[in-house]
Image 1: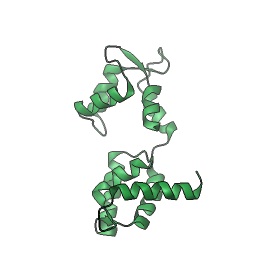
Image 2: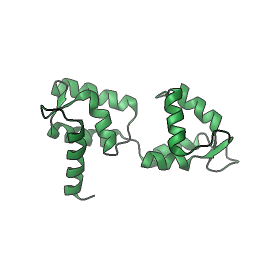
Image 3: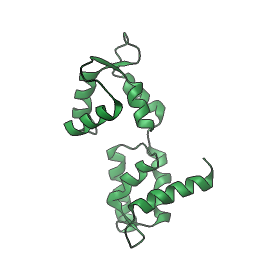
Length: 146
């Protein structure tokens, strides 16, 4: 991406979160970073928010935001890391296919736990038919890349 287009994209994401005082609240940092395509865990976002609170008194200017985009780039998950995580659920017999019940249970009980409502929304947005036993994990990969 060209530097000008990237800067315009960052400014647009910043402006979407910005109230009248030309700063965004650190509580909106995760949403703003994800809106520019950063793939961060909830843990990464919380750490960045704490850093923003400490360094920026909770309010980020556009220059602060650009700095946090760079920080986020250092910790975000790559597509390869995300695919590797999905392959954990691939039983080998069904190459690229994961057991839906096992996957659903795992995302609701491990790591950055999702609620039933979040799982339902995820499956709906991915077009997942929950009556099926297996699903191609590439469906989720495409959703995460969007």
